Image 1 (cartoon, helix red, strand yellow):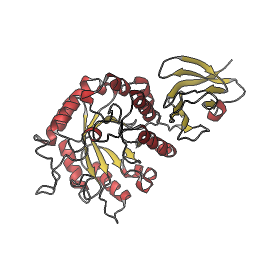
Image 2 (cartoon, helix red, strand yellow):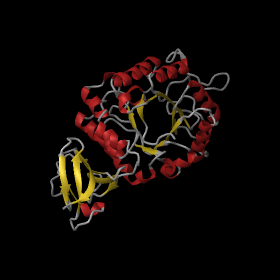
Image 3 (spheres, helix red, strand yellow):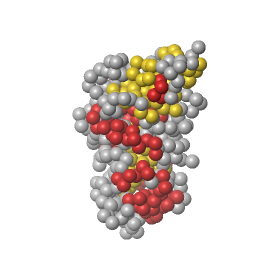
Image 4 (spheres, helix red, strand yellow):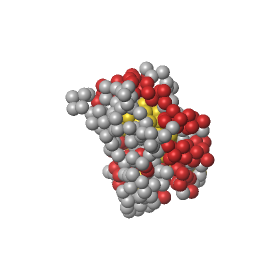
Amino acid sequence: MLAKTPPMGWNSWNTFGENINEKVVLETADAMVKTGLKDAGYEYVVIDDCWSKRERDENGRIAADPVKFPHGMKFVADYVHEKGLKFGMYSCAGTKTCAQYPGSFDHEYLDAKTFAEFGVDFLKYDFCFKPEHAKGQLLYHRMGMALKASGREILFSACNWGCDSVETWIRTAGAQMYRSTGDIADNFKSMSDIAVSQLGKLAYSGVGCFNDMDMLVCGMHNQGNVAAGGMSDSEYLFHFALWCVCQSPLMIGCDVRNMSAATLSTLTNKELIRINQDEEARPIYPVSGKPVDSLLIGFKHLADNEYILAAFNFTDTAISPWNGYVNLFDIGMPVSGELGLRLRDVMTGEDVGVVKEYLALPLQARDFRIYRGTAVEAN
C-alpha cells in the first residue's frame, strides 16, 4: 500500500521554478543521501513543471526538453533509483500545465504509460487550463485509472488547490495525497493562513490519502521561486512542527545542496518526524477557546496509547498563562483528578511530570510547544 504515512521528499518548484535541469536533479539526489535526508525518511525527488518540450512529439507523447535534460528522463530516474531514492514528475489535468507546457487532458493513459516507461514513482497532477465543462472529479479519476493501468506503482499527488470540495471525493480517484490550498509563499502569514484554513478539513486526511498543505519553505530565506519576505530559522521550525502535527506530506522546497545547519536540523528533527509519520494518522483536535488564527491548542491521538498536546501562537505578541492554557476536561480527561497526563516536552526532552485538570501554555510571539504523553493514574 502506498502512503501508509505522509509521503516525504523534495520538489523543485519552490526554489527553481522554470530553471530546472538534469544537473540540479542529480546533485539534489546526491545531497539528499550525503546530508542524511534520505536516512531521515525523505525518499522522493520530484521534478515540477517546465521539464518538457513545449509541444508533444510526432507520436503524441510528452517529451523531455533536450537542453534541460540531455540524457532523457529514464537516465535521471535510473540515477535517482541508484541512490536508493524514488523519482517523481509533474503533469496537469488541463490542456496545458500552469507554465503552459503540454497538459495531460485527454492523454491520461498515454502519459501514464510514458511516465511508467521513464521509471516514475510519483506524479504531481496540477489543475491549470482545465476545460470549463470538464469535471475536475472525473479528470482526477481518469488519471488515477491511467496510473493503475500503467504497469508501474506510481504515487498519485493531486493538486487542485481545494476546488470542488476536493477533500470529500479525492480518495475515490485513487490519490495518495491532495492539495486543498493555494500556493505557499515564503513568509509567516502565507504559511499560517494555509495551516489555519485546513484545520476543519483534516478529518478527511488519513492512511492512504493525506491532505497536502503544500511544500515546505523551510530554509529558503527569501530566495528562489516563491520568495516573499522569508522567515527566521525559529519561524521555519514553527512551520515544520505545524506541518508535522497536522500530518501533512513533507516535501522540501529549498535547495538541499546549500542548506544551513539550522535548516538541516529542522528538517531532520526525529521527534517531529515521528509525530508526522505516526501509523494511526489521526487529525489534530482543536481545543482552544481563542480564535484559531491567533492561538491553536490541539490534541492528537497517536499509536500505542500516546497523545500529543500542542500549542501554536500565530500572533506577534506573547501569550500569558491567563490566555494560553488548556483544561484537561476539554481533551476528554476527568476533572476529578484520578487520571492525568504524563507529559514530555518534545522539543527539549524535559519530563513535565503528571498534569491534572489544567495546563498553562505561555508562549512567546510566533512560538509553539508540543508535549507527548500518556494517560496515567494520578495518585
